[in-house]
Every structure is written in structure tokens, then in C-alpha cells.
Image (tube, rainbow, N blue to C red; front, side):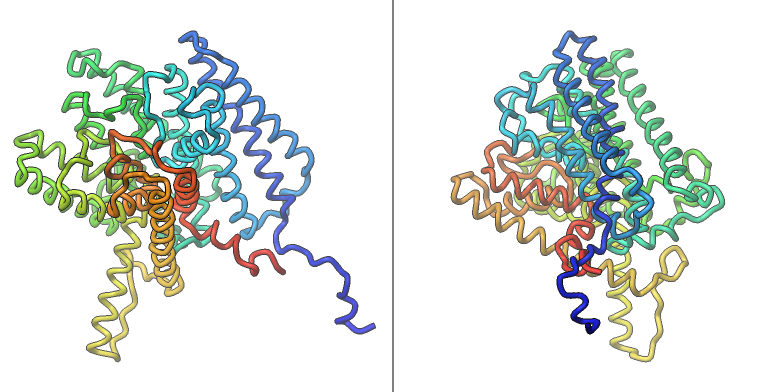
Length: 510
């Protein structure tokens, strides 16, 4: 029998260990269900129904335990290929976990599975896009669950951005490993578990600090609207750059002091968390000041703030300190893909909407909880374009691309170019689907509104324009548009590549 004929009838082995993937997902699900202890305690305090959170927690942990037991002994087979499937599957499962209480206790506005899942996906991807129209219909516990799941999403995203995606070499993120210089970072990065422990402690600490500052505004009479409940709720949404608020007008009803503090913490949350840790905890402010991405990030915020300020003055929308605060706040909120608002910017003139729309493609720093393209990719793409121009004039010129004085591998640059191309492509496809579905469903979205919805979903940015603006809702969109948004949020949070490779034959074949 020839070698070729011996393979006839032999089942083709998969290139990945699906059993190992299922085992790890089961383990993560088992522990994920335990976080419902917080809403259960809150429900007991407020006298709200406990069973939605109890069923969610027991069901998720039970599912995870069963899956882990059925696949035990397989985790040693985990590799890079399995990593793509794990992160993709885990995000889908976590979104389902976050959506269950909405189905159980969300009332008529969230009893549709697609609406509940969109709200859950928006929370765990820290997008902030919502289908909620009646905030008063939520119990205090369910409203806080909405905030809490955003904060949980931020916990996962920190490690996804700093430790997992770089090792999967996603969209040029392999360079992140060279962004963590210094002995303390080397110690942190020995294992993902150690990195998670330190960065999560820092993330929790920053959340507590913001909560105390906001709560003190209420205690001191600086902001009568800022109760301890509101302080915790908005801290839960600020640090993960999520943007959900228990109030229908976002931050508009809070004092200027509250808005300035949240703007500052949004800016900090948009930084590389490892760099932020070095600057605040390790007292290395020079390391922050020397970082090329941070400098460009700060420049983006400054230029965007000035541009919006000029527009607010020109159109007599605001003046004085209010104009400065509004411009700075909205620039930071859109760049960091948080999505908070102090005013209904959907009513601003077209030039201002176009400015905000352009900012949706910026994103914060790599290694942060922000979405969109990220500043470092803009930085390196700009250096590549400059090199091409210089080499057009002087073909013999050799110009290696450097980032923070370290040379960047050409494969990394190609990966960044590929990511941006895929990002724009998926945004265009998503916008087209939403436009067609909205036309069929008679949803009043202008062309700019449609483009903004797709950009906001893929960039995990939250509100759009028109009826989907900061004081509006995505509830009026058709089911096809909502499913498209869910897919875009999923793709955007995982930075496209881990999901996209699952659709290739090469990924599954040996």
C-alpha cells in the first residue's frame, strides 16, 4: 500500500486542541460565576430580587465546572493556536453571562434576547452602546450590574491588551513586549498570573481612589447629585473607559468639579497601564514623559480639545469655563472610547460631528482598556509613510523604524498595516449592513449617523449621532443592525485578528 493510499479514510486531525480550549473556557467560566456575590449582596441590601443573580452565578459556574470535568487533563496541550479560539470564545461566553440578568429582570426593554445580549456584549467590551430607554425601570441592583460588568470587562481587557494579544502577535502587538522596559516590569512580566495580580491591584486601587473622590463631592456639598452609589457606579464605568451611566443624561446633571475629575481619570485610563503603573506607583514620571506614544496621545487630546473649543465658541454653543470643560471632556471621552457626555453633542453642527467622528478612529494607548485603532499604530504608520517619502527622494537611504529608540521589526509594521486595513474594511462592511437594514426598517439614520454607529461599535466607543446619540438609544435599530453591532464590538475588542483567523482554513488544518 502506497503512502498516499494509506491516508485514505484516515480522519484528518485538527491543528488545534479543541478539548484543551473547552477545558480552559470551563475553568474560566467556573470562576466567573462567583462574581455574582456582589450583586446578590446588593440585592439583599436594596430588597431587590436575588434569584436573577443567583441563577446566573450558579448556572455559569455549574456549566464551567461540568465542562472542566468533561475535558480534564487536556490543558497541557494549550498553544498559540488555541489562544485565538480561547479569547474569542471566552468573550462570547462572558457577554452571555452579563446578559442573563437582563433577560430575568430587565423588563420589556430587555426581554428580547438580541437586546439583552447586545447590552451584555457592550458591557464586557466596555463599549457603552445601550438599548435602554427607561432608566427608571431598572432596580438599583440591575443598574449597578450594568456598571459592574463594564468594570469586570476592564479587568479582562487589561490582561488581554498587555499580556495575551502581544503573545498572539495580534495586529503588531508583538512590539508591546519591548514597551515594558525596566527591572520591575521584567519581574511583572515573568508570567501572566503575576502581571495580572499587580495590574489588577492597581486597577482596583485607581477605582477606589476615584470612588472616594467622587463620593467626597457629595459629602462636602460640592455635588448634590453625587451619592456614594453614583460615585461607585461612575467609577466602575470610568476606569474601564466604558461609559455606561445609571442616568439617562450621562454626566450632564453633575457638577463641573465631578466632570473635571472624571475627565482626568478617563485620560489616565487611556494610557498604557504598565506605563501608568510605573509613573504613579514606581514614581517614574520621566518614563511617562519620554514615551513616544504618550506624547502623541497627549497631543491628540490637546489638538482635539482646542478644535472643539473653537467650534463651541464660533457657534455660541457654550462660553467661558463651560466651553473649555465641554471641549476637553468630549475630546477625552471620544478619544479614549469612553462615551460619557456632559451635553447632547448629537445636536452640535455638522463640523463638530465630523470632528468627533474623526476622533472615533484614534483610540487611546496600547495596553489600556480603550478601543479603536490605538495611538501607537498611528504613530508607527506615520513613521512608515515618512520613510517611504524620504526613500522616494533618496532610494539608497536605509531608515529603520524606531519606537522609543528601539528598532521595530518589519513584520510588526506589516502586521500594523494589515490590522488597519482590516479595521477599515470591517467598518465599511458593518456600516453598509446597518445602512441597508435601517433603510428597510425605516429607522431614521442619516449617512453620517450610520457611519458613526459602525465606527462606535467597532471602536468600542459607545454613543453615535442622531437617535443613537449620547442621550439617545440604539433600541430603534433593527435586529440585523443590532447583530451587526454585536459582531463589530466582538471584533473590535479582540482587535479583529483572533476572530478573523478562525475563518481561515489554514488555522484548522495541520
